Length: 73
Image 1 (tube, rainbow, N blue to C red):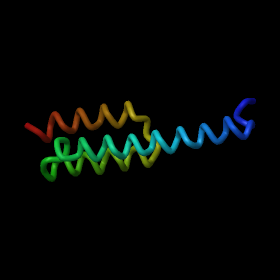
Image 2 (image 1 turned 90 degrees about the vertical axis):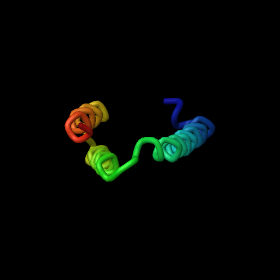
Image 3 (image 1 turned 180 degrees about the vertical axis):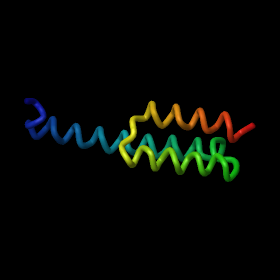
Image 4 (image 1 turned 135 degrees about the vertical axis):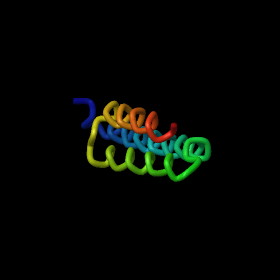
């Protein structure tokens, strides 16, 4: 019920924007170490696709771990 207060609603919008910014920064910082070749790039794109299709992040991580175990031999 507090979400309807203008000050609380504004604070929540600001917090969401800050979280998005921090996630983008983190992805930008991790990309050079995480995506080193076409295999890891493909896994990154597939993981992003899975998340955009609303797969649960735990499922995406499990699939990526399994695929990585086979692709990175």
